[in-house]
Image (cartoon, rainbow, N blue to C red; front, side, top):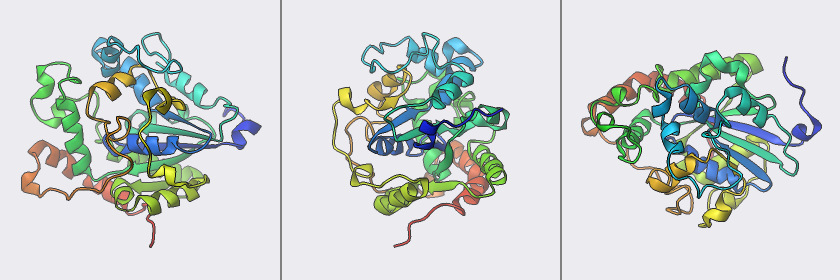
Length: 306
């Protein structure tokens, strides 16, 4: 039985953004964190999965991160190493809690953990939205992520095709089929198409696209959502919630320098797609296998009309 929605929850807008990795989602999370009286969550379901459900839990990405020095993480972040946030039930319970003083609860999440088996673990009271990105861009960036020596588990991870580098990270449907399946589920359940954005549209027209998104999820749009000033780490994460282990990724890699590392002041312009001859064969294969699902979602995306 679904938990009843409280009066406090009714007064809040609660939204989840589902995406594939390397889809501009952390920059999107940074943008949403600039909404007044907001609280934003960074991949709580994914963190639980990567810490506990890995075939080799001691070598999972999050388990490795838990052995790093995370002393600089904000005090209000939780610790996977201490046993917090390591189950979907824990995440669901926390997302459904009342948060007095907050008008907007936003969750950025990777799609593969809610692949059909765990729809019963979805939190009540949330509006589900989606962020897609051209598969070539997403998989090329994901391959770069896997080749980062700070993130690699072994020499094996730095070599070989993309599909063999991260079998615990890339689901069988390559993220895009999982998104299509979930969109179909929500459309049938709610009798309407969920909101879908394309990362290229966000980059091409951040003001128009983000304003339209805000209107559709029922929150006020302000310029701070598309442009932001560099903040000290001590205040940047004041309204964020994430595992302490995530701080190691933020601080020790180049992966999120534009969104949380002070490398940008907003959304940049998209680069031209490379020609097929310029794309590594493993990235091309993953992109080709995903394209029909991407195009199905792309057809229903929300587009700002100038």
